[in-house]
Length: 395
Image 1 (cartoon, rainbow, N blue to C red):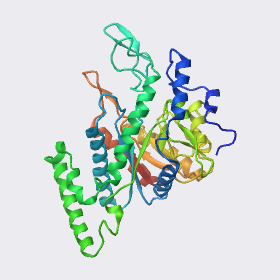
Image 2: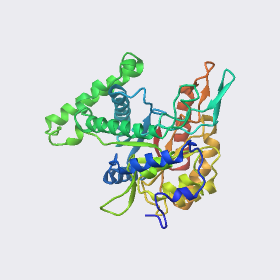
Image 3: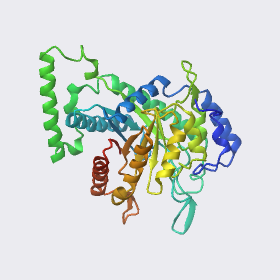
Image 4: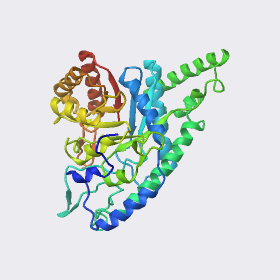
C-alpha cells in the first residue's frame, strides 16, 4: 500500500473533469450509501488479472480490451451485454488461433458510464446548456433539468453494473464461452460478409482441432478451460467520489482495492502527476491503465510511471496509447525508449479509437475504419522497430 495514502487523500489535490453537483450534502449522502453496498468485484479477481497482465508484459500473452465508448441506462439489456461479450469472444478466438498466444479479455463494461468532455457546455439552436457527461452524472436530453448533475444516478449506475457483472459471470462460466459453440459467436450482421466467411473457416478449423483432441481424451471434462473463460471488467476512474466509496481493504492482505471493477484507467485529460486522479490511483492495488496522448512527453511518462508503479511490478501498469494514426511514429518511439532506458515493466496497448475521431456532416462523431487500422498497424510497426512488445489493443 502506498505510504501516507488513504482512499480520500485525492480530495486534498486539484482534480479536473469532476461535475459540479448543486447540493454537496446530497452527494455525500449518496457516496456514504455506496460505501455500505457490497463490492462488485473481489480483490482475488483483480490479483488474477494482474498476474495475467504480467504475462502480457513479459510477451507471453496479448491484451484485448473493448466495449462501448460509454454505457447508457436506456440501452441496458441482456441482449446488448451478450452481444458485447460475444464479439470480444470472437475477436479473442481469432487472435488466439492466429498468434498461438493466450488472450486476456477485459471489457469496457459494468461501470463505463462517465466521459470527460472537451467543452463544459454545448449550444444548439442558440440555447447553451451544460454538456452531457454520461448517464451516471446527468441526462442526455437537451433541456435544463436533464443536464443538472444528479447524485442519485450513481446508485442506478451501481445497480446496473451489478446486474451486468452477474450476467457476464454467467456467460463466462456457464457454458456460453464453450469452444464447441465457436460457430454460434458469429454475429448476424457479419455472417454473410467476407469477414464472416473467414471467421467461419477459422471456426471450422477449431472444430476439427477439438474433434482431434476429444479423440485423444482431451475434452471439457478433463480440461475445463475449453468451456469457460476468464473475463474482466474495466472503466475510466473519472468520478473519484464513486471510486472512493467502492474502495475496500482486502481482508487477506490488508491492501486497498477499488471493488467497482477489476481494472481502472486514468484518462489522457486527467493524468496530471500532482492531481487527484493520479493520487487516487497510486494507492489501489488493482491493475491500472493510463491513456497516453500526443501531449505526453517522455520525462512526464517516466515520472508518472514512478508514481503509479513504484515497485515496478509487471502487470500493474498498462500504457494505453491514443495518438491518432498520423501521430504514432512522431510520439511513440520516444516514449518506448524512455521506458526501456529506465527498465520499467509496463504493458503497451493501442487505443486506435479516441485519437481518430471526426465529426460527420450530421454532427455525430465517428471514426473511419481505415484510420483505426492505420493506427494499429503503425503501433505494431514502431514496436517491431524498437524491439519492444506490442502487448494489446483497446477498442
